[in-house]
Amino acid sequence: MTHSDHELLQCLAHGDMAALGDLYDRHARRVYHVLLARGLEVGEADEVLPEVFLALAERGRKLRQVQSALAYLLGIARHLAHRVRKARTKGATASLAGHDDRGEPARPAGLAVAPTATIAPGPEGSLAVVQLLRQLPPQQAEVVALKVWHGFTFEEIGQALAVSPNTAASRYRYGIEKLKGMWEEE
Image (cartoon, rainbow, N blue to C red):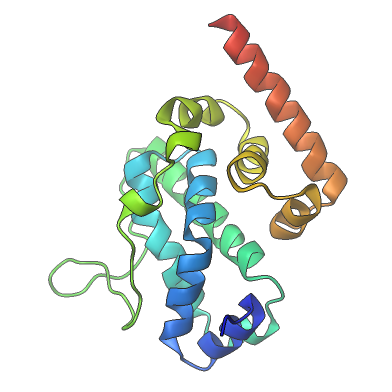
């Protein structure tokens, strides 16, 4: 039986780490694309992706009030992407999570981190496209990624990013116009 995101969040709130794996399987690719769209390099996105899900797991009972798992995950992803970009501009390396005594990132039991090959941009999101997306303002890039790579409606994008569908549509339109301009310049 397939559980809804809300049911999985409730299970996770009660400590069921299998629910975290299910949420990861369901949303990792979307979160990964948003991390790329928010300006992270592929290696940075590879490192931050599990941190997003770790942060979700650490919320514990607070998850009972979360209405949209994807919106919540994207909020965490945006925050962590901002921290990485800020650390990069300062020339510092930011530690986004605790590490165990071997120097490996600490992970709750049961969190299965998929190899990035399964969530890499793929043919629909070649590195050339990712490079173009990085030239857009992050708010436009994430809307374009969700619309083009994942087929979200503007209503769904609005819910995921906590903006109105009209705002999502505007960001998409402006992003696509800028992308067309970039293609014409080359």
